[in-house]
Image 1 (cartoon, rainbow, N blue to C red):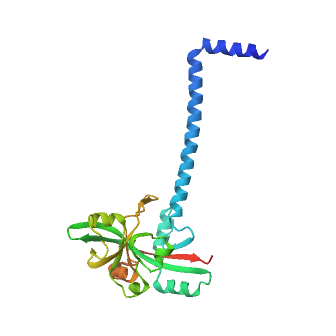
Image 2 (tube, rainbow, N blue to C red):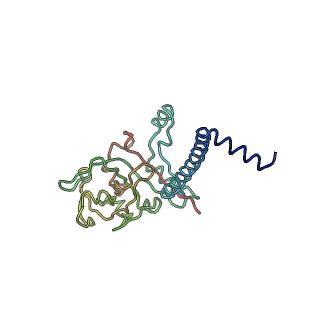
Image 3 (spheres, helix red, strand yellow):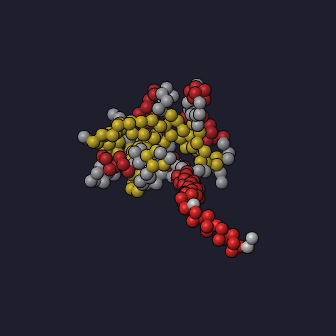
Length: 237
């Protein structure tokens, strides 16, 4: 059968069964559109994850008591571990010949207020002075705290952009004071707006010197799951 005859037979079949032909074409269009849409969504999600992970200092290894927990057994095992101690971090810094930098943080939550304005349960990060370098903490104003301020537990703080908007909506917060728990702190820096990273709001956060955080949490360290230690290690390039 010649090509012209095949084309004629196909046309006649389409005219004779218009509804079936329409439904077949519609099914093909929907199938193709679905495949293209799914591929576009997957590509977009991959790009989103790449961009978000790149903000988390991917060249830095994070060590903590709790890793990725996928079962009750893993949680119970992690709960029985001892919390990381200052002495262990010091020994790691002294003995690790392939480590470029080692930083430490003590993490928990504290209420923050300034007069009548109050924010409950703000994530509080007590950190060493090099934490800002290892975790790419960009500031839009002010500075991060120094080694001297860490060692002497100075009551200074770097605040996230949403804390600034809530507590100091119409004024420059630098040099002003906020109450973190029961301790008054002087604001020395404001972090650049970060948005949400992997579902976590990065703009409601407060950084204070590590020794000051130890005063804030006191005996809670190692006793409660909401107070934890993290160690950040960057290898020599």
